[in-house]
Amino acid sequence: MYVRHLSAPSGDARVVRLADVEVPGAPAGRWWPPPMLDPAWVLGHAAEFDVFHVHFGFDDRSLAQLRDLVAALAATRHPLVLTVHDLRNPHHDDPGRHAAALDVLVPAATRVITLTGGAAAEIARRWGRTAVVVPHPHVVGAARAALPRPPRAGFAVGLHVKSKRANSDPVPVARALAAVVAELPGARLLIDAHDDGGGRAVAARLADLGVRVHRPFSDDELWDYLAGLDLSVLPYRFGTHSGWLEACHDLGTAVLVPNCGYYAEQAPCLVYGHDESGLDRDSLAAAVRAAHRDRPSWHARPEHRAAQRRAIADIHAHVYAAALASTR
Image (tube, rainbow, N blue to C red; front, top):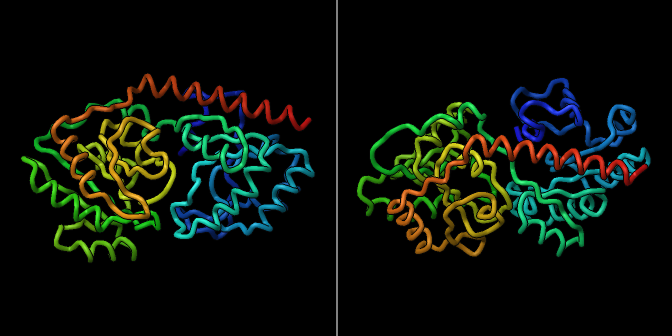
């Protein structure tokens, strides 16, 4: 979805993005290692593309494989553009593996992009590279985002465990939320979890809080869920950026984010203390009370998102042209 929203809403003849390469036998609807990251694919399809843009998908690559990929791009004189979404991989407890991969990719990239000024500053500190800051495009489609928020009484606070990623620490956050929500008139806490091993394990630890366990939402179900909340709480203890936050912004749902990473730079939101050293329950409670009292309405206007998307398309076209020119 992110990559689809890098072109202007009406299309962009300046940039043609190749479709994902199908992997025979790969399960439908599941991530699978992208064949384009194989150096053999680069060498065999060099005439089919001009710029190689990496976002995600290199988790399964060894450092040797990434070095071979960089070498194949250099050998065929194809520039590498890298968007650094994650400076800390949300799926890895140990940051070393992802950091080592970035140590290969960031110095080798012809151009580097990231989503926030804070992330760009960290990239400059760690690798001496200047990253172009391009904001995250909208996540929710324009027609859905333009719908009015559904009327309702009370104040709904949501915590979605999903499938319990490594960077998520939902149990203490849920306990702290339950305590403060119980104090607020008309407030209720909704906790959801996916029906997989990780989600069910968390749900079992929070059984007294009435966790709803279900299959992952479809996109439309997720938008309905988020639009039905007044406040969505992200229980992360490390990370960098969030597409969930952007979806909430599209739908006008306030978000409470941890002070780790650069979530707070993406869009207007509330912040509480939560990182690998632990949870600041007082700051969490204060933020929830502020949201209940002030009812912040940070709703991205569709016309703003459309203009932003046109600007994002222009920046990417410029970055690709500059990267290509530097290798010719």
